[in-house]
Image 1 (cartoon, one colour):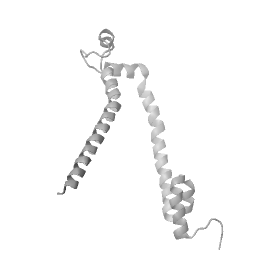
Image 2 (tube, rainbow, N blue to C red; image 1 turned 45 degrees about the vertical axis):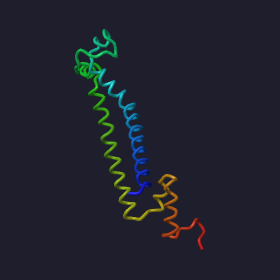
Image 3 (tube, helix red, strand yellow; image 1 turned 135 degrees about the vertical axis):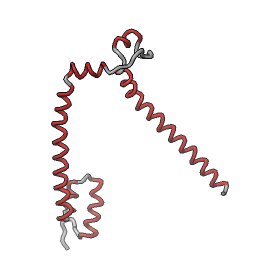
Image 4 (tube, rainbow, N blue to C red; image 1 turned 180 degrees about the horizontal axis):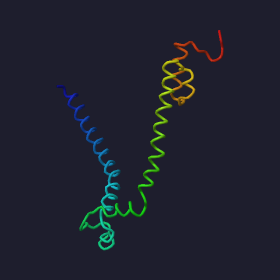
Length: 140
């Protein structure tokens, strides 16, 4: 193994360590508030009032969740969400399947390009000019 290869591997290890540390730090910054919220939600309200938010809890329980379900009628809201989301997903899959069938079997590349974002139209235009011999309205 040459000296250059060792230097490259060592610099690559340093880069990997830096990237892993960077990702780990931001993962911690992202997950900490979520864990803190869950931790605090498991503490009794009276314990938080008496000892403060940053103290170690005496007990952990699910009483706050049961109270939220009882007082806020969360099951009704959850059912409403399912009533909206499930048909929305089914209809999206159904109409997407219909469109996919038309695109594949009728070879409508030109029509599909009209509905794609601008970044992908370049490739579609290249394909149309290269293989389908479409011109820009000028027939030669």
